[in-house]
Image 1: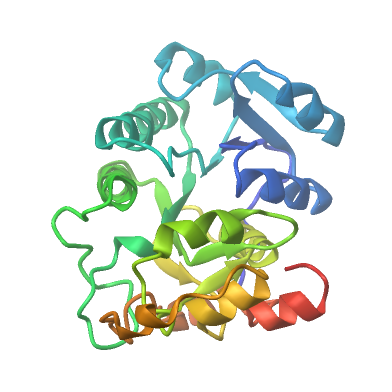
Image 2: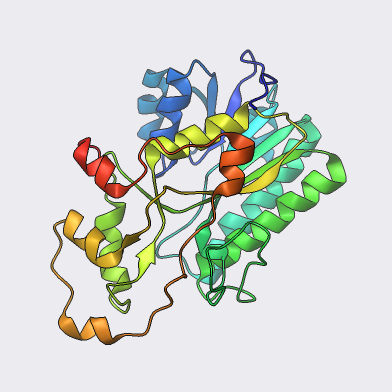
Length: 292
């Protein structure tokens, strides 16, 4: 059951408001009647966010002195900011881990009660022989790609904050995020040329990321938890390629080894505790609705 503990008079600080996830999430929060304050570096996107009704707090995760003013009066933080594709291990760690540490320290000082953190399903190791569950240890140690490796470390930092300081930390491990004109699918296809096209992956539409965040916002502040967020129908890379109208994979790729369970998520906890039910249960339903 959803708690009504959220006070709509308090601003919600959102980091990464202009990123792939944040640019779709912020309008949803505003349309839901929630006051949003965006932590954002000065630039052309400031006016765009302000025009939507977003309060602007100019700052940067790596500038600790900018975080205190941004968190003034804030009880809830939605932390989306991250360095993803193209990051070196050092860059990923600086933004995704060090930035999260500084945000967590400032949040503690400001009396923040809840942090909702966007993580990734890529933190799970291969070889589980079933869909990944929230209690599975992330791995390998550390994950081979700098992005999930940094997310694993950031999750741990926030978990420590929740345990030691009583802050409610909600970690949302998102499947492959897509939809609403996001070019993520098209950008991803060249990076998976070594995958067997039969490999499946769990996806989640931007509308369902928004649903998951809003449901977490209304939960009791001090509860917290880790949740897999994904749709109901894992899709093969071949199907995704065809939906994107991208070039067909070459026949030799079908001989590549693949783990039939890698990339799949057990989403029962999100259903049972958050009441999460995908608005778009498959990529095909999003395609048919014109929002793929």
